[in-house]
Length: 287
Image (tube, rainbow, N blue to C red):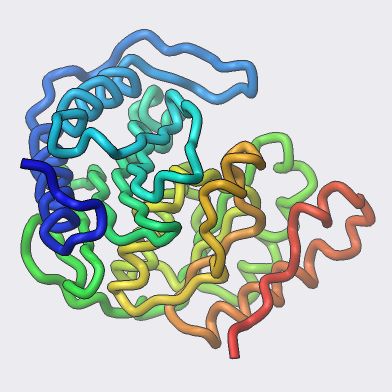
């Protein structure tokens, strides 16, 4: 039996399959494997490839045979005429993973007609792994139980940027320290965005994430009632741009988003480097 791509039953079936797959990962015995360095300097671990292969075998059955899969480890080609697409990151935060540091995460998102409709994120913590998931219209779940996202007791900022930008953008951290009690540079985009959804961070910003860094998290953030400046998630356009988004920020509410975005912009706008500024457009607040 094959489901239609847009039926509620089809979406729920995919969501259940993604959660089941996430649970299987929790029992994986592979701890570390060979690390490869790609041309752009990013890492691909053996765990990347294992998760990628396991996922494709699990999802690639006849019931889902019309789906596309775009991932960080193997980007593949995207057909804009097919609106059903899984967007996964087999291991976000590889540098943390290979150095036995937290956080890192596995991200599984599903996009239908350019809308992230569910997300499943596997993330380790001090008390073991947890699965954060959300299906459109059904709220957020943590380890299969309904979760009511709160807000940080004290302001906490989250931030990440590429290593090549560190010498130019460390001033942002200093500026944020003056406003927020804590500033965290996480090294895992998926984790940062998800923590906003869970209410642990006031906001999280990244200067150039990729499609697979945000797809699952966008679904979780929406169901958590949080806000982002990502209004257009056109997969065809993103694929043509190397799957790279521009300056992306998620926050607890519109006021926090506007304040944080303004502070970051004011801090960097005088850098005077056209290339940097072009990649960091000021995220306009929604009306």
